[in-house]
Image (cartoon, rainbow, N blue to C red; front, top):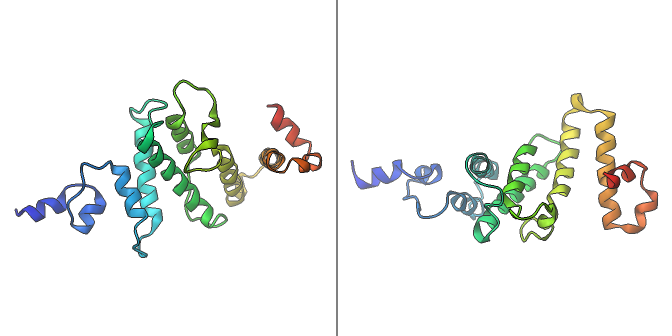
Length: 189
């Protein structure tokens, strides 16, 4: 076998597909993020984000300790994957386009949380996410509620409304008196 053929059969899927030498010294996540942000307009971002989500999910489920991605580049990559997944899931929110498993979000939050802190507000100062993951979770909850009419219940609707009222009261304090009584239950819990 020639050296070129060996290169085409080793490395990540993207490098094999392009028949180029894989940058094995680079983290796998970097390759996915780099390829996602390339200028190639024919690239479907769903495949790349789904691959990156799968890699990050494997890291979070097998061997990565809580808080293991709190430093530097690892944190930026993990947050970027989470952000891109959120972005794709809200691109066409009421049509099946890209689904995020809520358990994946929980696993990534566990990886990103500082190991010495029980406070989840770390995401509020994220350089990539920009807003707390709880607000992203609310958006995903609304999307999932709409897209699964068979699973809709008045309790779920009341919970979503309560969470939405909570966030509206935080952003627009003068709107607080107009909110439903369900938001009071959310702030008490």
